[in-house]
Length: 213
Image (cartoon, rainbow, N blue to C red; front, side, top):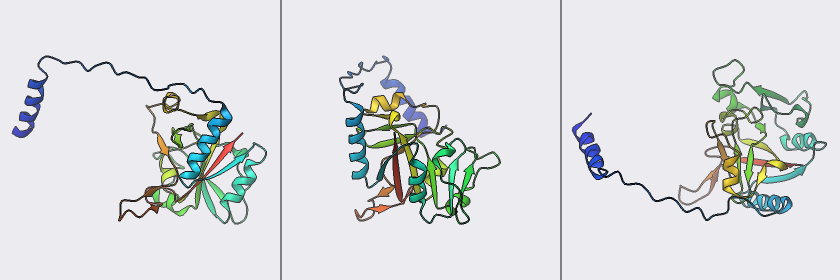
């Protein structure tokens, strides 16, 4: 340990000699929503659109057709191994789905270079927070590992209505904090350079959200 580090740690220990205890936090914020489901969905959709995401409402009977339309001219797209196959359109001569194994150390996992070569990714999601317009992926089988949603330029994300909540505390309560979590609030964007918004810097340039009833 360097002399400088020892001095810093020594000062910290000296300042804590009486073992001070922090005050108990006062949690007066709402922890359970009092709104109905339709109102909560409306809030989420409003936030997502404001973040420049595209939002669609589908059912089990129509979702495959919508995804087929959203994939448009995509030739190859990646899906996690646990995604519901009934949501996907049939492969064609010019377009096919590539399944990622979900573990970078196992056979069947696409490399970053391979992920960069696909046109899109289709996943489900764990929970969505209407209050902030944020979708959370918790690395579950239907969502896959973080890399498959961060590298491709187009993300089609399915949000089942039963996974939509209003508040942040409700959102966190549904997540497993011991697993990787990806928070999505619209397409990836930054305004760091000359305050000009640039999309697709840290993740997908296009985010299509399907609210599944």
